[in-house]
Amino acid sequence: MPKTATHAEAVHAAIEAMGGTVAVARALVEGGRRVDLEGLDRDAAALCAAVMALSPEDGRRLRPALEALLRQVDGLTAEVARH
Image (tube, rainbow, N blue to C red):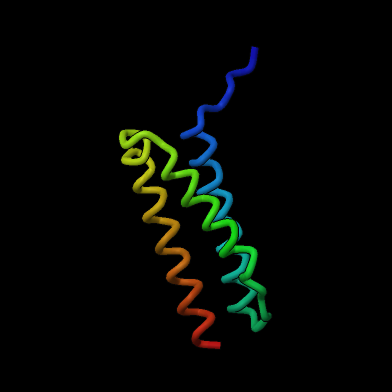
């Protein structure tokens, strides 16, 4: 029987997925393409709500992944500002 993902595992997967989206957006911007980031704001808000619903212990375990995502978003922001 397949294992059911816990809420923390699902949130971690969402963090990773958003990181992939940010990486693609950054690559597009670096290539001179315009990107619409409106959906990213909405997804980030949903992700924040999901993180807040975690236990403090689970939240602490996800901190490195969240910090990595923040660095990716900061990089995208800087790249958008350059173009």
